[in-house]
Image (tube, rainbow, N blue to C red; front, side, top):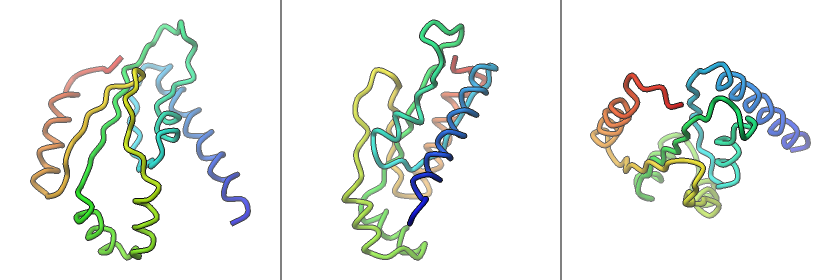
Length: 131
């Protein structure tokens, strides 16, 4: 659709500006995203802060994975078509190793897995200021 790229660029700009503003003020920032390309993830994880900024935030990429069977079942239940699901799988890029963030990887194929993930993340970030 015409204008979709402009809207996407505008959303990215507003998101990055807000993220950088909160980080500069000393707040923790969490972005929940299903970015399927490494370039999109890296953009979300960049801060735009000067290299010698007084704040050097820690960055975590939390990758919550599910089996293809489980993902397909969940997406069909949400009303997505098999074509949409196939296109998504065809474009997906696994996160690559990167010195700019710590990769935390979890399996999520059941409600029990999800509860375990929440507990681990809660324990990891409990009363911790990541920067």
